[in-house]
Amino acid sequence: MNSKTFLKVFLILLVVSLALTLMLLALNRTIAVLAQSPDYYTVYTESDEELCTRGEEVEVGDSYISYDNKRYEIIEVDKNSKVCKAKYVEDVTMPSLKINTNLVNTLIEIEKSAGLYMTHNDESYILSDGTESIYGEGGIYDVAKAFAEALRQEGFRVELDESLHLPHDNLAYSRSRTTADRLMKDYNPDVLLDVHRDGAPRSAYDTVVAGEPMSKVRLVVGQRNDNFDANYQFALEVKALGDEWYPGLVKDIYLGAGGYNQDLSKQALLLEFGSEQVEKELVLKSVVPFANVINGVLQRRAIRGAYNYGTSANTFLQIGNDTVKNSVIFNLMLGLGTFILLFFIVVLINKKFKNKTLIFFSQVKSGLFISRK
Image (cartoon, rainbow, N blue to C red; front, side, top):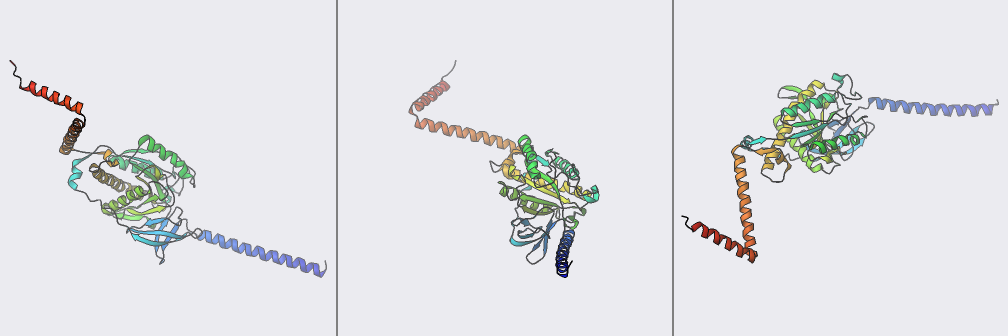
């Protein structure tokens, strides 16, 4: 091998070595970034204050209602680092749920129902279940069953559908739509609730309510559904009453890019009961007060519905005691009055009917005053 050939081979080997070295350095850097990258998204304000965390994917255009009722919009998302930026939009005016307590005592609950299902059946709690995911029936089943029982204690007729929608991927909501649609068609529940847990750090969900350690509950509403306005209003009412009755229980409201099958009902929510990092025992403690809040919201909607005809809330509460008697009498009088009014209108516009009516009443009058021996 002459010197020229040797030099060419040497230069080729040098270039290849340098290229491999650079590739390995880039690969190591990528691996390091991935190793340090959290399993959850962290959202910061424009002034770099941490706003919230979320285990599910965050997208530009998502909105977030904080614990203190401030609305933010996600404006930047780095998929690699899972760091997001959000801008402040407005202070949200929360609905007033104050009612006349005397009205509550006059109302008798006759029917209210809930449909429950789990889109992500595998979701589990690491400290209690030993892993964050169990292929099949994960720890989230224990939470859903406990929540269903808590709702029953509040007087709900509950249908918990335990159908599997595995695997946990982007098509899970398409598969669970069949379940949600079946619940609505077969049972027509007043509320449709998809039970989940989040993948955020433990600190995001730790709370103490009335001196009792438990886990917070996040409300999620899909922005891409025809019932968004109605479901968003429902979520606001749940948070408002939760903040009033059990401060610290309702974490926040996340308005995600998806639809989450919420176009099937005007009272549908995705509920995130704690995080994978929280003990399931703490999560189970939150289901009872949260069921109480759901019942309270529906009761207040029913009271409004009792005095505003045409609302669906009136289908599961009736006015009781003396009020129901007065209501029946009023309806009878209203019906009688309507009949009399329509009768006289017909008499006035139809001469033939008018003449027959006059003859009829003349005969009745004569009959009344004819003495009988």
